[in-house]
Length: 315
Image (cartoon, rainbow, N blue to C red; front, side, top):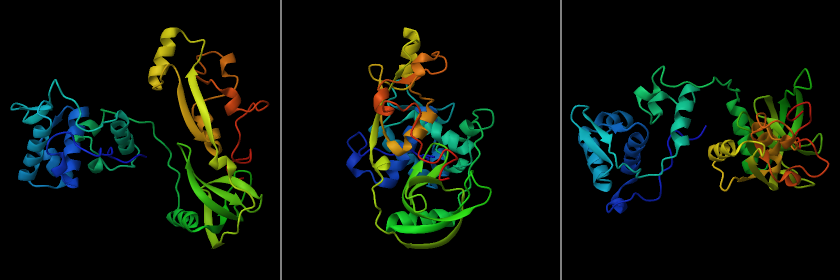
């Protein structure tokens, strides 16, 4: 899950920007965040979120108003600062940053008190998220994998593949981590199969040893190679439907071009329900299709390139 707060820009607009310390900059960003998405802020919000004094909270609000005088007005009845009609964010405020916080709280990844969203926004009945089953990753396994990636080590692990009834011990040479929007993998040289494979972190059940990694006979070309994927609305959608899809995916001139590591291409295709022959199917099934099919699927390939055996990741 992304960080619970959006990143601050290099500079704050306004004449006092060079004199703003980092801590106060974060509080100014918090004020801006609340005004952008919830339309209101008061001193108690700053005091509770950052543990500062009443005078400091008042000073932060005064500085924000100095930097952006048209952004907020004080409402005596509400006893709060409200976003003015001419409000324009002082910092970059992305919708995903706010929604990711709601999602993180719903999934238990972010504690409510750590979120920048208000208690009112997080209250029951205001939002909901589809529950997600969280895969447990043993802390000692993650530490060992990170150490192996950092220091160039081989690990001997017990791995529970879905193609076998019991865990099996094997040597792997981790060199990178990958995330498929659902599960974390370690990209590693498999000494048994003598190729690079994806191993889910959760099924690593035991660590049996480590050693300096021997030189690999080949490089991990699938990890190093970037594949250009051009997404467009299904051509059989109506013009209005194509515009809606293009807006939804933030396409420019009806196209969205993304770069994906070939090793992660299978996961990308699965996530967006992409297939080579999608244009031959009803547009209701495949609203987004790949325009440059021969780049994504070389001629003769009808299925995504699997980063693991068909029995399962790291099988």
